[in-house]
Length: 138
Image (tube, rainbow, N blue to C red):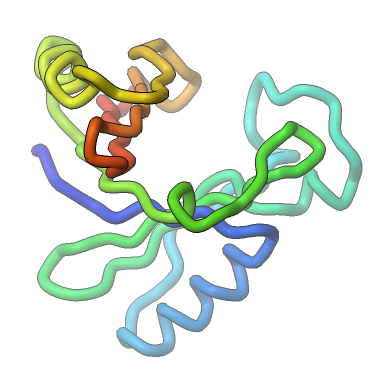
């Protein structure tokens, strides 16, 4: 079933932030995965391996916050503008392709849609500087 969630990027504080958010909303941290446990990751330091590649916490009325830690060792730098993303979780690759094509028109950056270990995924910054992520779960 399709849903919309909010995806947040942190500079190494995802776990701390999501423990806090779970306490605020009276829910539980879910789906926590560290970089060291994710398949097909490039070599990285032990410190980076303990950072969060994905985490979720339900907040209100079915809305879910998700997050990852950005790794400077991989050339990722947190800044205002790349710290919040609207995540569209859709049911089919056709719908993902349609949404990506529409949202990436006149965009300034984008990944294209591609198969990843967790599903069919893409991300773009639209012509209004809003970041979108589209995913079809594996």
